[in-house]
Each structure stands twice: as structure tokens, then as C-alpha cells.
Length: 413
Image: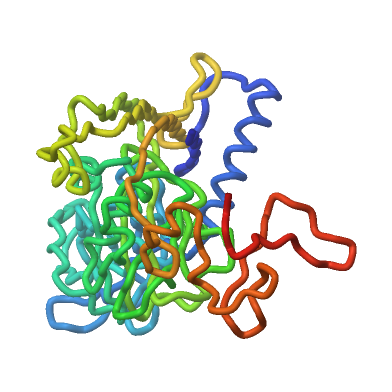
């Protein structure tokens, strides 16, 4: 069962009415949670560029502001002596970037997309004019990231929501990244079932290096060390309806990530000024499934058809987000937002497998309990040293001197 609550904040604005102390405490708690979330800079992006005039001369001291179109949060900087600017540590989202300078007409670029760990290059060329005339242009789609050396693949919100994926596990989108290959276990029938849900192995090979991928959720590590293994394990799997993007950074990602051959960053959505919600129910049932390939060869055998195994999955959930307003007490528009997601997973997924000891099938005698063939020389029913293997009875207690109870002549009753 997965439950997730996220809060966010935007630029301040006067609230309506008097706010009780308990509400103030609740609001401060949400803002503190937001501050901590924003402090996780591993997934934050940036906007940079150079401001110049029509002759190509740079403009120092120009005022730059970037407004998050989802939360309405505004970040402000000023160009340096070379006319360059950088707005670091901003949440991945779509922005409106505005520049103004004395003697020049303001200019705004819309639809500036910032992805996790990426830098959007937004240059401006200002024209001499009045401050009352604003030029608005749509930012060009970025075909190549020239501001960083990273190689990355971004799965957008629309792709995450519209792509059918058994188990609703957004981390599996990592396999769509460039240079990514999923391991044999993950591609097998058993692996594809086991990797659907939280806490299961995600075996990935990226750029030829296997099982050393840093899995993060809003920049926070989401791959706890559950055992001494080269395999990544998930600590928490969010609902796909609550995910904004999934980004796979193959090379030259930030050193603060700590370790790994690559970074997979799942970014959660933030609330907006409008209430939004989604309710879903994902299920599969034995009587709606085809039989598995492992059982098909036996369907026409003399013993009759091989029935399908019991395979039932029930996965209901919902997501709701919007402004955290309290009628007649607190107006959260353009200020404070919330997002709540809930998902419950109940599954019965039997796995068909056949295994043998050391890869050797048992003989007809061994199937009857006769393992005398494991030893070439028995002395009083005990295998002589160096003559082979002696079997012991695991149901009998060990003697005080440490001796175990052997099966005479390796015969198991």
C-alpha cells in the first residue's frame, strides 16, 4: 500500500481573514516540508543565457524573472558584467522568463521547459523601446543541451500517464532511455511479474554497467540497501498519476549523486490553482489471461489440457491536488498547494519454474530415495573418506561430539 502527500508553495500574497494559530502552525509545517524538498538539489534544474541588444553588445544589470506556470513561484536574478545570467536550483517545470533593462522594451519567453538536472538556455535580444511595450515569444524547443555535458532521456508527463504499464511502476520507464538494457531476470516471465511492484529488483544495464543505477524520487535516494547485492531495490513506488517526469541521466551527472553508473530521477507533480484528481482501478484476472508459454506444450498431452494458474491483481488508487485553501480563513491561490496520492496493491502471482540440483536431473533411483551412487565405497553403511558424498538426516539432532546421523548406504526412507 503506497500513500504519498506532497506540499508546495509559491510567491507570497495577502491572505483573506484572520488566521487561527493552529492554522499558522499547520502552514508553517507544510512550508518547512517544502523547504526540505527544495533543498534536495539533485533533481533541480536551471535557466541560463545571455542578454544582448540588436548589435550583439551584452547588457549588464538587466532584471530577469522566471515564473513557474504551475505554482506561480517567481525567481529573480540580474545579469552580470558580461550580460550573462543563471537561475539555479529551480523545480523541473514549464516557465515564463521575462527580462527588462533601462532603455529597452521588456521581453518575455513562454513555454521554457526545465527538466530534472538540466539547464535550459534562454538568450534574449532586446530592442530599444518603451517599458510599456512588451514582446512575448514562444521559446524554441531545445534539440541539444549545450549548457551541460550530460546525456539524458526524459519521459514527459503525457508519456508517463498515457503509456500502459503493468503494475503502474514509473521506474520501469528507465528501460526506454538511451543506452539502457534490462537484465535477463527483468525480461523473463517471472521477472516481469516480480518487477511490477514496490520493493522488487530493478535490474538495469546502462552503458554496459549493470545493477549500479542510482534511483531517486525528487532527488532523494529511493534505493535502500536491503542486502549485500549488486541489484537495486525500490523503497517507494509512487502512482503514475502523481508523476511529472522520469529522467535517465546516463553520463556526466552531478557529483553529489554519490555513486552509480547512471541516475534515474522520478519527479512528482505539484499542485496548481485548480483542483485536479484522478481515480483508477487496474486489475487482471485468470479468466481474462492467455495461458503462459511454459504450460502451452502440455495442453495437448494425453493427460489433458494444462489449466491456467491463479493470477489475480487488484490495484485501485486515486490522486488529488490543488490549492490548500480554507474557506473564509486562508486563501492558498498562488501560495500553497497540496498533492495526495493513494494506491493499494493486492496480487496473487504464481511463478512456474523448474530447477535441479547443480543443474543435474535426478536419476530414477534417486527419485526413489536411493543415493548410493554418490559413493563408491561404504564401510558399515558409511561412505569412506574420499569415496564420495555421505548424506545425513536433517531431522535428527546432532550428537554432543558434533557427529550427525547418517543415512546408511545413502538410502533415504
